[in-house]
Length: 318
Ligand SMILES: Cc1cc2nc3c(=O)[nH]c(=O)nc-3n(C[C@H](O)[C@H](O)[C@H](O)COP(=O)(O)OP(=O)(O)OC[C@H]3O[C@@H](n4cnc5c(N)ncnc54)[C@H](O)[C@@H]3O)c2cc1C
Image (cartoon, rainbow, N blue to C red; front, side, top):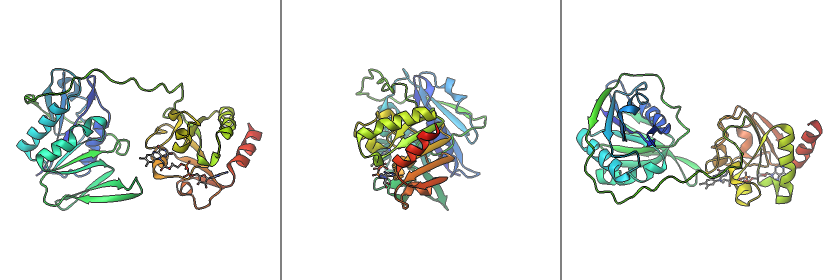
């Protein structure tokens, strides 16, 4: 029987939703005899135990902290103490800005296996295999951790369906370990003003890529999107050039088109980074002059053609 430990995250006392994705990821390698514990550190950890009582969770470990401010040294000390006491085969946590500040150092202190931004995991016999992207997302790499009793993984968000259902986990209170903190939390940065642009909330997105060629050509697509009732999105080069606001960028370093049902991609090649934000959409229409463009491999409808000509056709219909 192996133990699996998931490290929960919270902001201002509210459970970070990606915690339930990390639980879902951990569940994929949980077998009948294994036990899955989630540790939560906050000013009122008991108040979050209910949200963590999802299917597959056998134990919730609560650690009462002096405040809800994120304290990396405290999280690191808790993870190290629990790992030393329980020797879990797997420690999983969401790949978040919080995890970056405690997970690698905890792995070093434990001498454990480590992989960040993990997209998939499986076990083969007693071996754990984690999949992550490499070479700027150009390839997928399967990692093994030979000789490591424990492996710590940070799990990419928006990949695993958050764990749901319910369970009656055992509640265990753990004293916060004494630790020196060198950080003074001043507050959280306000999210950048998106100027009313809501890519995650839009159900219809018309998106343009480098095929638009020139800043002077962008306005007609803003107008077209407006006429069609769509939100104008873009690929990263368009945002990087300053032709459209960053809030319109779809993809890994931009926005996830979470609620989109129709996505028209014009002059976008379909890089993995762009696909990250839109490949889940059921109705993708791709317009590209290159019949070999990767975007066609995920499109429901593909038009090999010039985006300006297609835009003109569309304008005639709206
Ligand atoms: C860490 C990292 C994060 C990244 N994050 C993102 C991200 O969030 N979002 C993102 O988009 N990219 C992201 N990128 C960049 C990504 O790798 C690609 O460079 C980018 O997506 C390419 O944008 P594009 O498809 O518009 O341009 P290109 O790849 O240059 O494609 C332009 C396409 O337009 C077609 N075309 C040209 N003229 C026309 C025309 N007249 N009509 C029709 N088609 C035409 C061409 O055939 C070509 O397929 C990221 C990269 C890295 C390394």
